[in-house]
Length: 116
Image (spheres, rainbow, N blue to C red):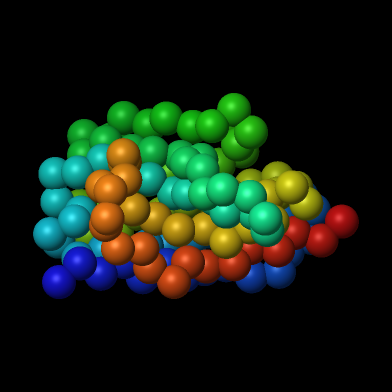
């Protein structure tokens, strides 16, 4: 059964930091590139950070230099360290494979709110 459980979101002031975690089932995590996706209110869901099974990373320009994605293959978990947060980072964050497998399940996401 495919399972994705995101956690770690919350309310933070501008300039603050948060660390998101995503526990995934082994069937979706093992050997796959994983990514964090951001969905702001009224906007589409976009990839902001991705990591291959070997640890190579890729970031959207909007978060480059501020966010760091990592993974623990032994724990089937992917993380997103978010620093120097801005109000425009306010969104629900999801993890999934990269690229997303059409028809694949999504977790409930974790909400990040950055106050100005």
